[in-house]
Length: 132
Image (tube, rainbow, N blue to C red; front, top):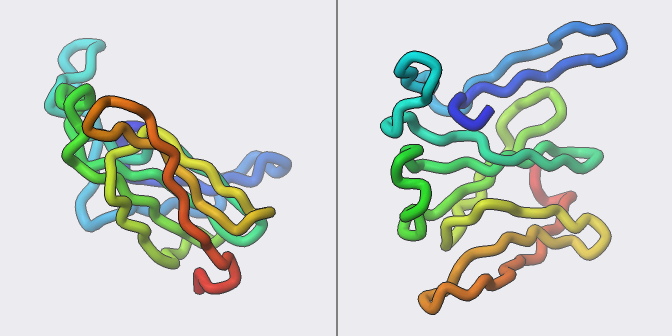
């Protein structure tokens, strides 16, 4: 998933793929050099979380070789329903490597480094019924 902008919905019990979607207009895939991934390869779908209603996908816009210096490139979270239909996008104010969905407290949380290099926990209230 890390180097592709496609998501696949599988039914594990029936062992079949139900749906495939591409996020964005153009396909993204790794650039290979032998068995290694070239540093020019773009990173895409980094992490996925889900609630009973939605699938949340952490998206990046950074090349593999720039990952360690990606602080200036904000991340985004794409929200899809369980049919993998687009619902909305959250544009984050920071670059993040991870996020969490706190349904009990209606929050989306993520971490990012501040100017001093310290990790800060950011969150915002999300009324999950409003995501429509």
